[in-house]
Image (tube, rainbow, N blue to C red; front, side, top):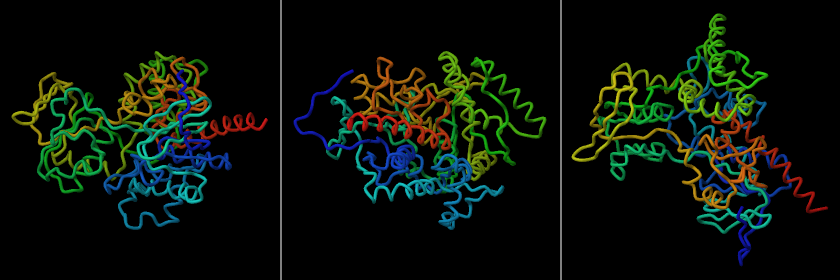
Length: 475
């Protein structure tokens, strides 16, 4: 581990710094401020408000939350808190399409960001939570303090740091390197205004067929686009929809002995068959797996975790992360009228001269498919596998030996107390990992309900460490 020497100009001090002020960081700040009301909490986040982040600081009216509002909450144990907030604030008064045919509410994503901010804002206004509008650029250890440098504010030091950086930009496939720098390649579809220049009749190839692809199609469609869209992924799997009739989770997946990947898959399939005999769908079985995953996942051998990530994750993602019915209807309509095709194929090559050309290998026939689109849009999801090397503040921690990428390449290695593990595999004192970057340790940690629960878990761990520090200082 590398401990830096003191600067000639000591940084301003605070008790706890949270890096990242999206939903995860805002939720941790909220819970810490309630658990440790006398602690000084600082959040470093470049956006002007906390709680939105990449997912919920989204002004696109075509983008909706992907689960019913009745299952989203800042407060674990109070599942319909967000739904009650919507009613109390008449938050969907100008959005009649938010209510689906089954009566469930799927508001625009920005509404959830506003909900989160409504509970964190009073803490910021009162000074209990300080918001530094900047990006963290480096983090180093100075004896018992972490020192954080930013791109636009003075350095700050704290005894505890929570890493709540969640979603880096996607990393375009290597085959698209020849298109780098061209206007036809859109490497980050979620960047503000990224799709604005696409003409209504333009032909588009989308790399990826998951939730982000669905958002892109919904945005283009809402903007009047009627050109041909082809979405490519190796398996050609699109996100599934919600059940017509909701039901309670079905099945038991926590076993006395940790299962192998094959055994787990057999258990899930058997549960689906039993559910079907009772008139239920696969949805309730996957809901049970999701709800129990953080109990059985830590007991799985690393080799089994690796097999699950490598072989089953694509299938899990499209069944677990379901699509809002309003967006699903857009995809179904475009597929029916022939302007959207979802193709199972592996990207082979790309060239920009004399005109844009892509080739791919069909998964089913093995034939070479050739496309001449006007635009190529990357929707392969956040590049979590390389986040340590692409985010300067995380790279600085790695250089100091304080963190390391996890073995599954899902984020940052940590233990079950949410403590970051250094290159010596030991916990780095006072350094925590919150949210999706802790997936390798906890398993299911991408859906909002699990992220909300994990934020509280991190806050409780921070409370314990902070209480210990305070006891030592006052002894």
